[in-house]
Image (cartoon, rainbow, N blue to C red; front, top):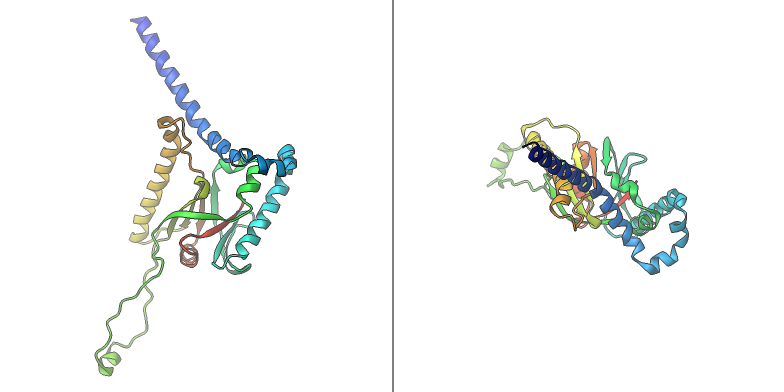
Length: 255
């Protein structure tokens, strides 16, 4: 009986250790996957030998990549989004001109972004990153339905100052290229509608954490880890950004 108990606890211990090893290495596997985007390209690596050889050049690589990405988004005909986390500002840009600026109240970025090496950073972030799918609690183009009056008398009877509709809860969830995710969410939840969307937002975050933790266990051969950038702004700013940029948006991320 004692030997059986020792065997049982040994097996449990091995399983726990294996689980911890797999879950803690999931972000590292994603980092390696991103870095291989550059290292697997021999032509690219041959061109950028210096930045691969000297890791201390990473700050300069980031600075140059960010400038090139902003030039690239300025050449686009559509409105793009620039997220500047150093200055804590989200900017809507059109042809190189900032047409709207939103202060970032707070943000949280996955530690995976800190593990991206110079060659991969040079290859990924020198151009805008594009959205591939989205969820939003905000209607893209709000439509107001109003019954037309039958005559001028009915029009005068119904004449009154327009009342602004209650603001929609602001939660936008973008899937980006390279398996990244960007979340824009409002900072306050006041109305009943707000609280319903807040519940969905929190459930989505929990599911994301669950998938990032247990996805590697369920499928060890494939990296299912999703690096997330979570940005908190005022609700009106989230709505303004979402409605301004096109469905397949271009986003520059200045980390």
